[in-house]
Length: 207
Image (tube, rainbow, N blue to C red; front, side, top):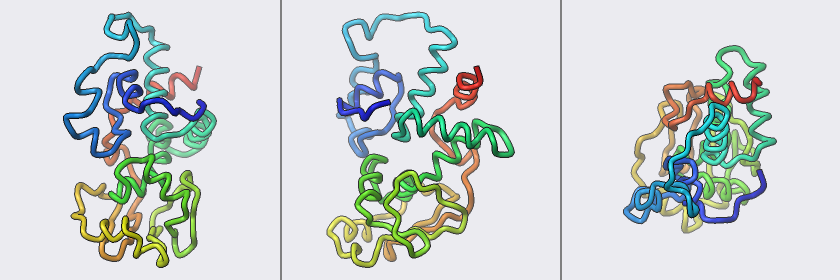
């Protein structure tokens, strides 16, 4: 999947679900999917029977778009998950959740995964005291993620210090004052609130 540069709201409409790609806008009345929850294009509103393969493909595309990964990366996560003990689909989602950009988003530092990815790319964070600027970096239980000392006085992070911690996943913790968080445990399926039918993706790749 090449880098997508068109309207992100079209992706939600194409997948028939809110993917929360634009931060606060997705929770407001300006959300395009709320206004017109049909696929984009002249024939988007027409009903078409979708094959089993089509449903599996759409589930894969939806998941890739939620986490902002390309096909090669996504296939790699599936292959890694398939080699791990346990259920392949749940392992794959756990790996996606443990991406550093997703962890920054889940901690509330970034309003969207795209913004979190940009913050990581710009080397704003350290993991266990070492600078990490790779969004796909996979965190482990016990890892400490912090805003680097020389970045803490940036206007953006000063605002983060005053925020209230919302619905933090139970596998993470974050202290806004210290601008520091920790991975308490590896995420399991019930910790992941995204509406994803991971078994359909496994069936697609298993063919």
